[in-house]
Image (cartoon, rainbow, N blue to C red; front, top):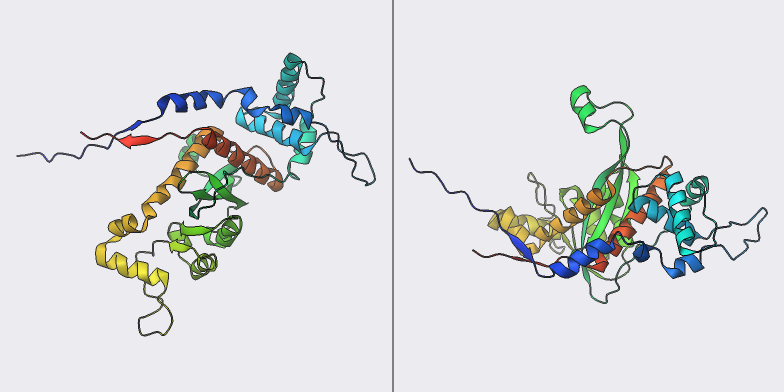
Length: 318
């Protein structure tokens, strides 16, 4: 009796290992995150003109403190002592916000996710992931089931297929579906969108309409029990979703994914994987606004890491 030979898994090697290795080490360098400009803008020089005392610390100081806390996974008081020790070693005579000031100011920050400017139209890949707020661990859940207090937030991301950068992000509660925030994700993209790809959760008429309004080609796989929305005898232009469905019926779902570029959507899952590995997939804050800012800061950190250096790999041929 002969045994069938299993296909060997494809192997890849890096072209830029030396540069990428250097960038990985730089992610832990304080000089990479603590710039002279941030120290110069540490205190708030402006008066608000409102009643009461003005904020002592600038938004730059609060964002930097939150960044270091999330990057090195430090609790509030430890972050406070961490920055105080850094300033002492640097000879910088500046006060440091206490953890209550950080918590109070965090939810009011407006975080800009850094993106490398480009004049070219992008292929936007959208997806979402759950981030746990509080609840039991995996072991307790497997043994005793899910308790009442287990909950999470949803982080909806729009990723540039070419660079892996997070272009736009939306935070919602766990009862908000992916298609409900699709338009918000597109609104967060300033440049031109050539193509937008998402999984079957975005197979809704309003998602196709939003993509059409932005002049983007929607690449969304119809569900397996999908039917034609707009038949050929209709006077209107063929619907993109129906064109996808007809092509899938003709050549199969796998080939359609390759032809349409939908298989590139896996890059968004790579971004999600990086996000969970680096930050742990769990929030610390209890207020929703603080949780949203916490996630936006994590997106900004991840983009800076990606912009510092990306791994460039090639397939090894045997």
